[in-house]
Amino acid sequence: MKTSEPHYVGHRARLRDRFLKSGTQGMADYEVVELLLTLAIPRKDVKEPAKRLIQKFGNLKGILDAPVVELRKVEKIGTVTPVALKIIRTAATIYLQQNAEGREILSDVATMSDFWRMKLGGLSNEVFQVGYLDSASRLQRDGVETLEEGTIDRANVYPRRMVESALRRGAAALVLAHNHPNGNVQPSEQDKLLTRALVLAAEAVQLKIVDHLIVSADEVFSFRKAGLL
Image 1 (tube, helix red, strand yellow):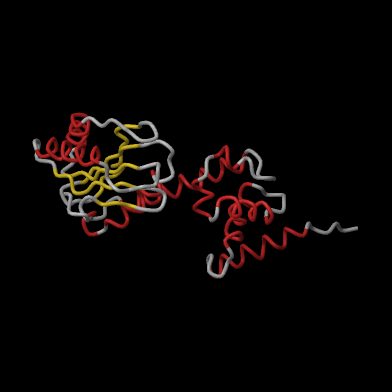
Image 2 (cartoon, one colour):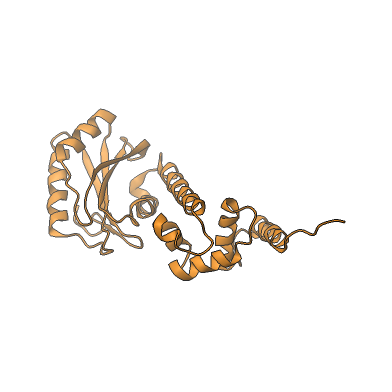
């Protein structure tokens, strides 16, 4: 006697078919999350866990930004799935960086803003990074480096280290970026003073800082756009 397949098998197949035909167009948020969960949970119905994740974290972005410890608190998510979601998020960040590499940054600030918002915006501590550009203002391959990591509201950045790293890489210009874990992307006086110090240090060796981005999970502040550079 033939054993019937679990009901979720056909549901998964239909979801995949819809995705292959139209992408995520017309899908509910929880259905997109379902698709991701099927990659980590191959033999269980994941509709209810997907709905619970949406209910707790609001949307896909909230789920991917959530700490592993919080994801594991969701019923029927287990311990492996949160790690899989972090891998997916990290892969997306790598994609954005590689997508930005070789692009002329001054005419494509949005790509860099999206990259750093995703890379740093959801972190709980402050991280300061630098993007190294070539003479055509294009992001170098593997051209993003973390200079400092700090506490919830402060990272100490040393101009000498930035300059030495830029010269070692043969960079012609730089983009600075750091996050504000409190969500407020407006620059503090300390941010402004640090930016001036870094600009002076760069100019002393004929390097140009083309922008300083402050990011949160949802917003980006550009020093250049605001007329502060």
